[in-house]
Image 1 (cartoon, rainbow, N blue to C red):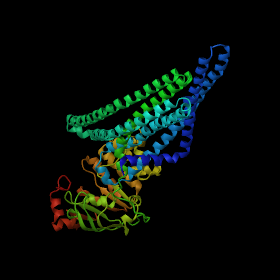
Image 2 (image 1 turned 180 degrees about the horizontal axis):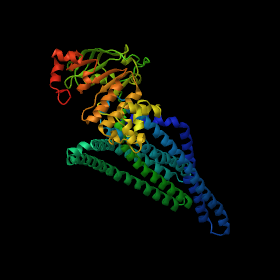
Image 3 (image 1 turned 45 degrees about the vertical axis):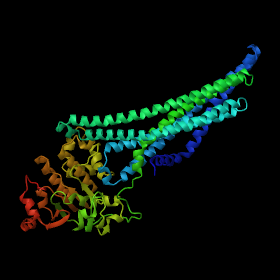
Image 4 (image 1 turned 90 degrees about the vertical axis):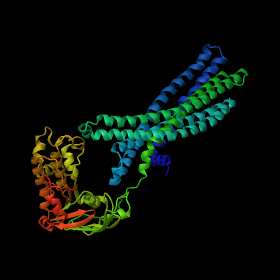
Length: 590
């Protein structure tokens, strides 16, 4: 679906949930505007007519004073009513934007792993904010400009048509030309705004990427390189902004000229009618007041159309994303699942990456079985498929052929949540949130008690260093745990895995680049974590490999060897070769 149509449909679907509030707001607006902009000028018109007909003597003043009181009452009543309307409108609008925010977040949350590997996190945040914010930038002018303009046309026609039909005809005729002309030119501006919004999104993504990886930027002394890249993005944004401005100003020239034509026409017609005795002074006042009011709103309408082009440009990127279906989806009728034994079976599994072809399949009939409670290490040269197996088991991606089963049930027959609740995944790089240590540990079990959290931290050899921190478990770890050392982050990640306590453990072992003390603590914590679990380890550390019940050697997507450490060394195959080329306690993968 076209992004503009999709954006409008999405906004409407969210707004109509608040139909009752909207059915209160807009009738109240009608009353308030008629009181302030129609009834009040009518009263003033009566005062002027009264003055024109009579000398300002005591009799005339006695007729005028009640009218002045009515003007005052209209002012205060209108002011009070608008205050109520604005409060109701903002509250409702904010509630709709809240719902839109959750819709966008939930959609992004449902997207598959590969979706995020192709996009900047900063760009997604920017696109999300623009999509939600565009609702406000769309509904504000629709409510305060377009709706009020329609009301103004109605009461102008009703009041002036009987006494000055020529004025009404002039206003309507020129407006009927003005509105489609302005919209025609503003529509031409939409592509320019989309390019501008896209350039701004790329700039935001570049900024987020540089800030996220600031350690790499500084350690490689590449501040100037990043500045050069950012300058390129900023220049592109500026260029697109200037292009949009040039188009906009051409439109402003035309629309401004048309508005002034309406003003002059109404003034000339009103004066001629008055000179020839067709209308009174009060009617001239009404004609000019109503016309100026409509002209002001037509100018606002011009700005509204300009706003619309920016709205659709800003919302377009996220509107496209909201129409993307997740690569990995739950079945229509999932079978409830909760792993108990932890039997893992890959049967004739076929897989190739989406940007490759069937002939370039990584796995072409892969068969692996891991028994309940068995601890299996996966090793092999880089690119052999070790990490891909973990992603397939977690359904971050789906295999194109064969099956993957846990406890005899195909993982595609269950919900992703049921599957992942049964698996604990500890990646090589700890995944910590910019939250407290307590929140990070309890992420594995959000209803865990403080006692259980502390117990998990002790088992992960993390409690001592946590207690030594000034705020203890309430310490905020910084973005991605930047305030903690590598070993500390890893131990918190292990504590989180322990508190989840799923029957299956997938471990991308991460003891590299750690000091000896941290390594010993983490190795001890890892072995505690593996107890009574079916464990699959992408092994780098020899001390871990040797203790596995079984080692599977992968090469180019095939199982070339499997057995215990001793058996594989004796076989003098690929494992023995990797073992012989060990360096610093790690297997050489390249």
